[in-house]
Length: 324
Image (cartoon, rainbow, N blue to C red):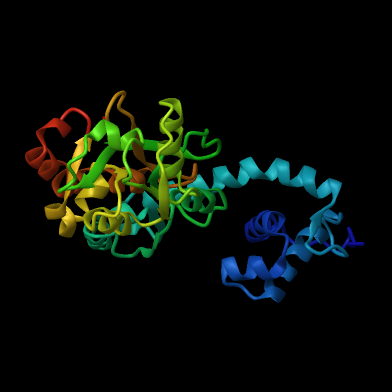
């Protein structure tokens, strides 16, 4: 049992490590996330328990489990730590050039041209900043934001509430049908499964796949399929080869320019639907940094995707747009 008389100063680092350990349940996992040694993490937690005079964890359990008093303590410090992080972020980034760190993730949709230009721009605008750029699926990025492993991410907005995260809508990206260019069957026959051309699906664990499947169910469409893939580029290659058809978006279609001479984009028949891409951030992310990233992203999306799409396919002008 900790000795109440052997008290150390209450440290912010100890509180932060306690919060991470409560989430991870392992000293090794905390050490890996923070870059500290296991012994350093353990030292901070013991100092915190000594200061409070209580056991916060049941140290005999693996994974580590909070004691009842530990759960109460965690509830009471969560909001306080969030406020402190937000204050620190605003203080260090009031002048963007003084910002010290930024952990940013995007979905694969932007990695060809937009993310490289964004990275160069941010490196120049924030010369003292240490950056982490990460690419992953939307649901993984959102999980990483919830675990405070990232400061902000660019994702597909999920259908469920984000709760403790904040989102700023960026782009309305409507769903479209892509067929092999030489296909002679009608669009409605293909989509409604009255042909032998199979439907090439996005992998079911992706937000975009769930949105498409929900819409098809609402329309009563059950298209035959024999291929499922997490990569839009692979789906487009399959369509170009005449192996099937797919549902994608103009943004994703624009990334597959090498296949455009062998495929054709069509409006989705019947009721249209779209996904929204958004910047999602933790509550303690600096507003100054967030606004800087958003402004540059909007300009890059307009120049690299929207302008050319509107020029090549005029019917996209009303649906493929930045969200104001």
